Length: 308
Image (cartoon, rainbow, N blue to C red):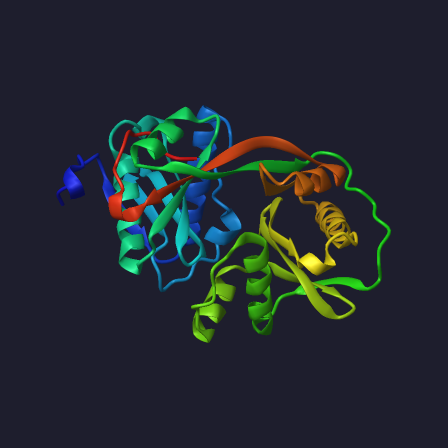
């Protein structure tokens, strides 16, 4: 097979995956371990999400060479108008065009779906990833601090009117409207079937009730002894009542009691209010990731290393 768009052919072959099996997941984890050991920082792979990929859609791309996968790129479609991209190449297989081939395949898949924009997630300390994103035509759309629970979770006096429960399909319209208010998630054009499919793709979503009425949402992504807290939003009219602090404290304490060794979350670098809340609940900033927006109609393919 000749390389698309004039890209050179590195040793090995591309494998586009509809869902990931146990062997694939183990290979991705091993690959991530090798990359982080060589580069430091973090790869935002969200292993819990990778474990529950839909089997009717291509979201993951592996580059297979002897003795196994040397490159991986995943698509994370949290909103219909863009998709996040996170990927990596084994240190021994870099500068051969592997990541460029993965990126080409992934953006072609997004273009086929009609998704106009990709966000490359790059650890700020990983300069080769930033170079690739810029050479692909990317500009920083936003940046997020990643935070980890480093101190004893705060104890908050519980308001009995605040409860947390697992989301069900009937909660999808509320969850999406809450996320739209908090993060500008565009969902008004989605039909009922699309909403249900979106809900199934993101297990671990919780609904926060106040006096038995939904007022917020949060998602917990679990993987072995680590957990990530995402999509944390409280309706504007219920903010300032300590609900967010109570929920975050309860989640952190419950996860710690279950033996989860690492609990993390992310916050916009410009959201000082949330940053103060998370810090007061025992979380500390451990690093920063930049999100490079690439318009797919005019994308370019750049230097090789991989994106974190």
